[in-house]
Image (cartoon, rainbow over all chains, first blue to last red; front, side):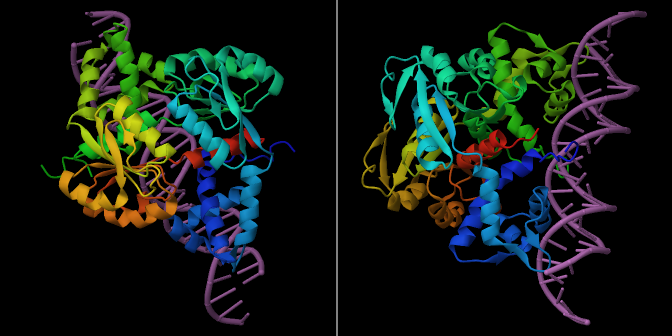
Length: 213
Length: 213
DNA sequence: TAGATTGTTAATCGATTAACAATC
DNA sequence: TAGATTGTTAATCGATTAACAATC
């Protein structure tokens, strides 16, 4: 089916988790049907955007009626979680890395921590969940054997820059990047999600300081 | 000077920390001058964008020559850090909260952790840096007395929803929000920076799963 | 002076919002 | 049938990119 495919804009994809959270909440409150207008009001957006977004995936709604909440839950779960559990390796088991690995493993749905790596003897051997931190020199062999899909990068910029070119060879298909190194530009065929908490905080500082608006 | 003011677009503000990082690196490498073209290449963006962005703050460059790196460092530091150190309180001293408070206090420039609050007896009394976790019932009084500027929200969605309307009264001018509750819509006059790590991970999952692109 | 590169205006692109015919 | 609300096309808005005159 060539040319049938329609690219989903990234902004839409990034809104999916938020839709999902709100729809699940509605479902738990026993709401059975919701209009784009009411959903938009909850989310602080416009009814147009809700309809446009849902229609990227092919109209879940019923004209004159609205959206069936249960169906919406199912469709969003299909979008977000079908395809099975994703296995993740942590690279950099410092404080931030350990916290994020715990988050992924325990609080997030659809992900599993399968290994953790560091070069600091202080943290090697330490347990994250039931995964022990290994020396990073084992990383290549581990990936060859277990083919994890996700790499969590919680290492300094310099180390990330060194590691980046290796990622495709390791078979990694998604990177959750907490390092300052900007991966997006340098990788193709690998999904990258950058979480630059330092930048985030700095930009907040600017806005608090600046007289503007 | 009415109407002279020109609003800086949020996307530009969010790029400032990244410019700053790269410019500092150049400065440390002894680079004295850089053109928008070369800087853009480093950043993976366009020369046009670099020039447009810098010109929001009034041309730091010299036609025919480029940008003086040292001057750029100074100007960006003026933008990002002038106005003095910002004091921050942590609300929610769980694992994520403690990690982020540590980051803000120790790794980030221009911020200082001055208090931490929770309601869990398990963590109350515990030290973060040299700040002990207090019971959250002390929050209002603490803010009245010490007027911290930043609140770090590391609490569940429900608690954040309850807390949100209080923030203006507390004199908070910036929120670094790690809760799922979407503050942006509900606050005016307070800068909000949302870090939705759960959403971030979920959207990565979608992109890894989806056949697209 | 000639070459380079900025500051700034104009053109393009994409995302958001509005409008409305289709239809439950 | 009338009212409501979607799916979808059109209009608007803002951000990014391109172009070029100003000027070092």
